[in-house]
Image (cartoon, rainbow, N blue to C red):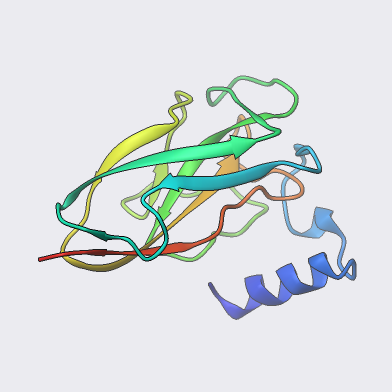
Length: 143
């Protein structure tokens, strides 16, 4: 994670920075919680094809383009930092979009260490305010 994002997260958690500076206009429930249900942090997987399932609490899932309060859709970040929180989440090999409302996937990773992290996007692929972001996990794909 880059230093700017870390510094902003520290200021936000301390109540020293307005949330609107960091994210889009779509409000998130105050108690929204996002996590990767599998694989677990520190997991060693024996295949390059890895199932990943997404978990969340206190926020719903709706497809991209659907405007419905307290919902969004998943974006899986692979081996990358959190993107700018007030812009569209990029769509590339490191930023996977699940705009149909999917809550699980299978990804292909090369052998070695990798990081995975989830971020919810609103109907326009922009993070909520405050952003709903999972813990970043590290997994190892065995050769």
